[in-house]
Image 1 (tube, rainbow, N blue to C red):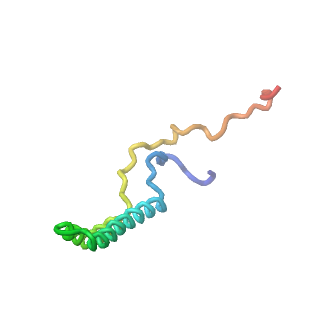
Image 2 (tube, rainbow, N blue to C red):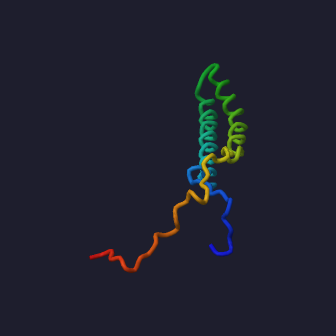
Image 3 (tube, helix red, strand yellow):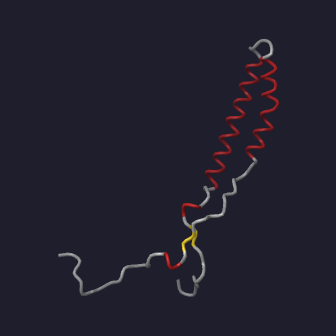
Length: 106
């Protein structure tokens, strides 16, 4: 582009780009909803299971909300700095040279 200097700049390879924010939020939402579903199951099982299983269900119903909130609020995983950089001399030319004397189609 005119007016921009690309000397010495590094171009990040697309393979090292992080996940999209929408994908990350969706994954955290799914984890939270699964955890809350398990918690709801613990409450329902509390009504029908006998003996020490009731205590397991109580523990699940009490502990899971804290774990679910921590997992949902954990945020994005910070990726390691990319190890693959393309230098300007490694990038291909922007377009092929044009030769008007050459016939491409016959």
